[in-house]
Amino acid sequence: MTDDIAAELDALADEFDMLGDPMDPERYRHLMDLGHGLDPLSNEERTEANKVRGCASQVWLVTEPRDGRLIFRGDSDSDIVRGLVAVLVTLFSGRAPEAILAFDIKAAFARLGFESAISSQRSNGFFSMVQRVRRDAEAML
Amino acid sequence: MTAPFRTPPTFDVDAVRAEFPILSRQVNGRPLIYLDSAASAQKPTAVIRAMTAAMEGSFANVHRGLHTLANETTDAYEAARESVRKLLNADAGEIVFTKGGTESINLVAASMGLELQAGDEIVISELEHHANILPWHFLRERKGVVLRWAPVTDDGAIDIEGLKALIGPKTKGVAVTHMSNVTGWRSPARQIADAAHAAGAWVLFDGCQAVVHGEVDVKAIDADFYVFTGHKLYGPTGIGALYAKAERLAAMAPYQGGGEMIGVVTKDHITYAEPPHRFEAGTPPILEAIGLGAAIEWLSGQDRAAIAAHEDALYRRAVERLEGCNWLRILGAAPGKGAILSFAVEGAHAHDVAQILDRYGVAVRAGTHCAEPLMQRFGVTSSARASFALYNTLDEADRFADALITARSFFDR
Image 1 (cartoon, helix red, strand yellow):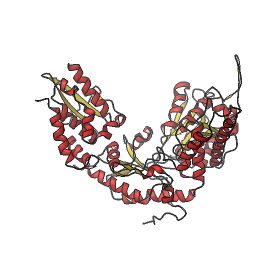
Image 2 (cartoon, chains in turn cyan, blue):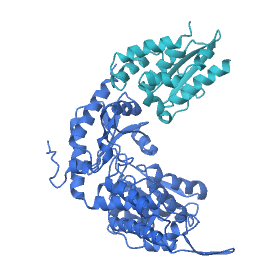
Image 3 (cartoon, helix red, strand yellow):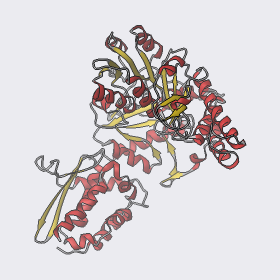
Image 4 (tube, chains in turn red, brown):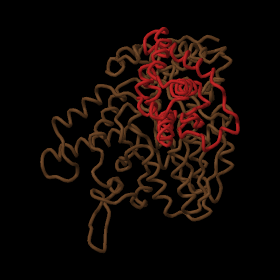
């Protein structure tokens, strides 16, 4: 497992850019497809402790340390947020905490065309999820 | 059945749109289709100019100074109150400025609540906005007041017979919406008022939506209290009004204390100003009141019956275009409802729907619409809402429906 998050982001950005300009609605369709590829969490994992505080949509994130790296898995009842979780997992799961903390997560989502999705932080809890990723990474240092 | 979707000739939507500068902007590279007016409406130039003109030409604090600007500003502030009075067909002295519908209801609950005892009952409904729920819950928590909940029918109306059955000797007040912010249903206000009065109770109507979409006459409906907010009525935020019958206001204890609302203050004695100023502690939202007055005058200059017909045509157009979409569930289709279309999309989170529509330039609300008991009643966790206003066009109704159908296709898997 490498820590080349930037290369992973480049690859993702290329995928999305093939769908048109950054504001094209088709990006959401692709994002949701990515979310459908995510392994769902079991009911036992959908606990209050794993729940990320959000207003309307429910988001769960499970973090497991493994060999000095962080493994993330997540789920949501919102297809869009699930897609955002999938991007998050693609970019950050299996990385070293230092690499995660050195990366500007918000800028990464902006580059993919989902700035508005993550800036409406109060409504989908995504911002809380980003904070959670960083917090868990910091805890491993 | 195909009704003609023609806008009456007396209403020129293009001319109206030209008075709302914001409507010409683009969102995400597409023309803005603003269908969130039930949350907050856009502002016409008349409102923007009135507030700017006050700041540029004549502004001071009100009721206080002996100088020219203070007098001019006081006159403008009181002229705005007169606009509200005329809008509701109230009498002089019956209009209190507040910061919105929420504060208006809190004021009534706080003042009227002082005389309530444990076991006294307030009748509300499952249809209410949280603004007309929470203030009464406070009385439940603090004074042991009992809340009685009038049921809501499957088509999003208050069950009037059910409501009447809850009104009894212990009922002190009835507080219900005049038009639902979720289902658009309009309540038979006079009938409700008569039922409340027959039991010796007062009645409050939440008119935040109703006042926007039709004419309101507080005398005709015999309301004891009527509240609305300015920002949904094409006016600014931070301003609203409470209508209360003069004899109610005269008997009510003040809500907040401060400047402007007093008669005499000594170290061990206070007297209060007469209503309505008794209920307006501190410097009021002066510019916002002036803006609200301008909004009301502007709206009063329009043909309101023609506006209502136009809004109804918008709603029917959208619903007709969505006919046959078996994945769509409309929340509330009671006869005579206003142009508010709340809906759930099967298999899709309402927030996701709203976010995708935004990419098509369509602004809708999604969530619980500050009406969680109603969401529970309908068995949904959230819903989306397209609310139409006088400045929307039939073409926008079409484009909304088309964008929704496209957005739904994103969820096919």
